[in-house]
Image (tube, rainbow, N blue to C red):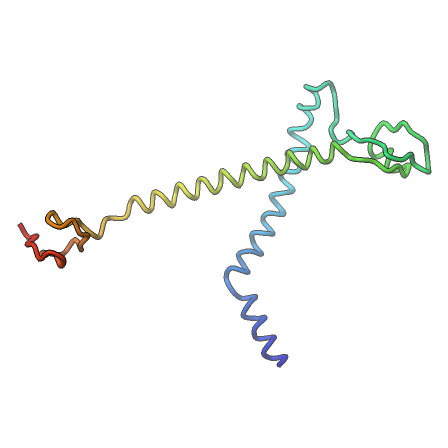
Length: 154
């Protein structure tokens, strides 16, 4: 029984789609790090500058003062160090922007793949023709229509 389960498990793991999925997850994790850095380090600083030197990562609301020190807290790190309970609005905004960037990149990637697939389909030569008498689809090599028996060699 254990050999059977081990054999089935080995078969499952060695399937191509499981390995492809694992590779996709690993690449997705690495891609997410790049996107998060792009949002935090490239997009948010100019956006914050346009909005009057606002640092989105420090947009937070204190729900409960910290036991270590009373507010007001100038940064989220200071609030967390004081033990305050906060709603981290800026972190959510950064995550939403990261998600939108990832979703847009995936959209562009899929759109490109679909475009390549359409070109391959269009490039395929036709394998059938239409009979001029009965309008049935027949093989290109046919000299006589199998439906109406019309002579197509003319």
